[in-house]
Amino acid sequence: MILRMCCLNDMKRRNRLRPSPKPLQSGQIWQIADSNLRVEIVGKLLVHYKLGKADAKRTATSVSAKKELEKYLTANKAILVQE
Image 1 (cartoon, rainbow, N blue to C red):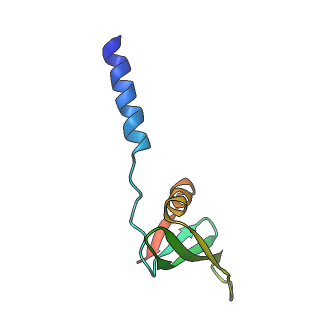
Image 2 (cartoon, rainbow, N blue to C red):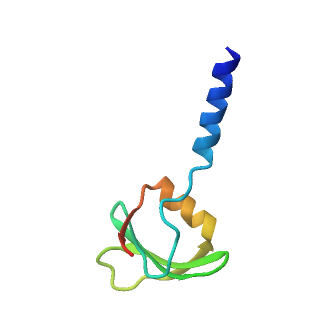
């Protein structure tokens, strides 16, 4: 019984510490459902990015924390289209 509890705790810990699929770099394009996220500038803590539909002519540049954007990409199962 104790052995099983330890194994379950280890599995939970591994799931929480899952690394992001790819480190964010300038110029990346991520596909999220029907929209694209283009990474413009990656700093030490912040990321400048553009999020819009694939056929949009103009999109606003947004700024977010690097960790928050990585969480958003993993939560929405983003696919790296172009590096």
